[in-house]
Image (cartoon, rainbow over all chains, first blue to last red; front, side, top):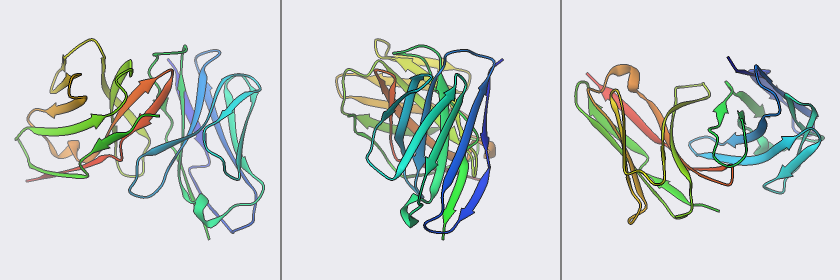
Length: 113
Length: 109
């Protein structure tokens, strides 16, 4: 069966520091991968998605970036965090293109102070 | 992109039925989903409905879809304390999900 992991579970970082969040998927190959952010009391906002290694699409302009160095690994990064980057970051995967269900990881709670 | 709207809060007595409503704008959504989020956790897929269906039942869950009105609802029968959570509806269009803000369901004894 497929599983999705996110690391770390929680993170507290100062403003201006770098960020690296990791997402890995097991039990499948060539998944579509997604990064979402959930701000407090709000729905999910799609940040990035990837349909293959090295293929990243950005949905919103911001100081975050994403990379997919391996088939089942998706990294969310920032060179300098802002206060507004605080939130709950969720990674998701799906198999296929147009209609496949997305399955979510446990999330990373990021607090920028 | 799609706009998805939900009411923010619902309080229900244990044993009663809960109905969570959602409206969406993009009629080309292929699938519509309901996810559940418990405190501090990721999203758990509850159920989904294909856009050419108008009803789907899965144990205590019933999804109704009114394409004409672009209205989706989730009914939970015999609501239990473990059903307390935030429920998100989402529309899928070309493998992108658009989420509502979530409905916080509180089950009271």
